[in-house]
Image (cartoon, rainbow, N blue to C red; front, side):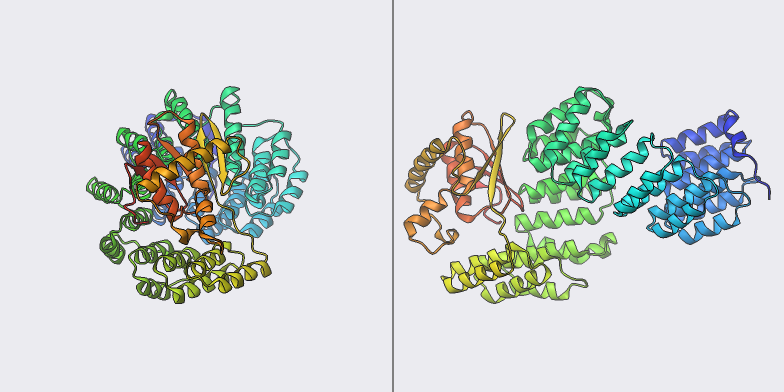
Amino acid sequence: MILRPSLLAVARPLTTGTAAVAAAVRRRDLAGAEEAFASTQLKTTTTYNCLLAGYAKASGPGRLADARRLFDSIPHPDAVSYNTLLSCHFACGDIDGAWRVFSTMPVRDVTSWNTMVSGLSKNGAIEEAEAMFRAMPARNAVSWNAMVAARASSGDMGAAENLFRNAPEKTDAILWTAMVSGYMDTGNVQKAMEYFRAMPVRNLVSWNAVVAGYVKNSRAGDALRVFKTMVEDAIVQPNPSTLSSVLLGCSNLSALGFGRQVHQWCMKLPLGRSITVGTSLLSMYCKCGDLDDACKLFDEMHTKDIVAWNAMISGYAQHGGGRKAIKLFEKMKDEGVVPDWITLLAVLTACIHTGLCDFGIQCFETMQEAYNIEPQVDHYSCMVDLLCRAGLLERAVNMIHSMPFEPHPSAYGTLLTACRVYKNLEFAEFAARKLIEQDPQNAGAYVQLANIYAVANRWDDVSRVRRWMKDNAVVKTPGYSWMEIKGVRHEFRSNDRLHPQLDLIHDKLDRLGKLMKAMGYSPDLDFALHDVEESLKSQMLMRHSEKLAIAFGLISTSPGMTLRIFKNLRICGDCHNAAKLISKIEDREIILRDTTRFHHFRGGHCSCGDYW
């Protein structure tokens, strides 16, 4: 077989039918491309190649079979035909099939070799990719880019560095961006930024790599700073990927103000109509505590994919609207949207935070039959949580033992927390032991067990656990709360001594304490976990970081304004009781997010219904 030169096919103007196929493929309308192909009377090799490219983008085993049938029907396949078929095999993870195609190609051009290098590396066959790279009769910039990216994405930055240094042409932004992304992925932010600053040319992908890398490395503040530079200096035009990273950064920082600015900015551009951007905004509002704006945005979305539905169902679940979450789940199914495993996870979470134990059990037991979804470790963890909150500790332990895989640490953590509520030392010691076996540096396991012993007044055991922590060099994560006022983030730690307005905060708390006691408040000393006098325990409770943040919010904002407070650990029971009373005394809504959910305190009640 003789290959027709692919350049000739590219150089000729596309016929009307071929142009229609190409246009449909560009907009990822494979059905439309197939229809246009079928209606094209005069098909050239380029016509076949356009549809073949559509199959390569669609991937999936079924599409690979379609691609093979189409390729076999091409009267005169050219190099583009073979190279695109290679891409189809790699898109479906069929490395053996790709090798068979490559070995039977009558002629191979540099694109053929590059497709093999790139395809092998993206499918995890890095060593084979490098062997192919070394065997290439000729390399171009794409070859070097692919190999550097392969080593960088695998985390082998030493090999990536060597390849980068040996690359003959270093003006390509793709080559540099691969190094930036690789170092960001391995946590070496300093090295990544050295490459970024040294880049001779930067493109949007380069900037996106920095923004996403900062977020991934828990430096969301730097990500927002880079984004502001992009927008204000008009260096490049952000795309949906940029905004997804930035809005995730806003969520991580609980930076609702900045998130709203991003929303206003992108609504002025065509980006505002992107479903990816809309879903990222929706998720940001949910995670930053503004459920009302999340609901409004969701209702205004003209097109909703499964990710958008999942984000809204999850948002309701996290904010205590379990019944609304389930109602939305039913509406989603009515509209013909098929649930996925994340949807079921969100529904189970809604059951957890609303106490809908029976519905959750039914959902879990029928998910495979009803939706063809195999329960995963996260679903099992949710069920353990659901059973624990319902007080069914023995069933929860049986669920852990029955898992077809190693339980996630969160399952043991949930059980340990429940053991404190239900004062079950036997299961607490079991859960703590399992947690520590999985991760000896897990400070939460030691702390929770010590807390359970403290509540039982077993102070010798508390001391034993603390010595155990010391022997294993375990460092307890300090609890702190934070809030944003007028764009400024304020942080508080228990018994904080650093905030400049501490005197005013303490004064406000003292006055609130008197008003709360008049309403029947009594400090819950079970949450003062030190062997000291009760009066000192009460004082320590009133200096918890949540209470400091609430008091600061009250003296720093206008009457009636909603307070949004965030905490890096779970809210304690005494602070939960106090927040309910303070919301009534001050006639304020106080929204507090801890590590598991949002609590909306209003008029002396909480959205969790005290089921948390």
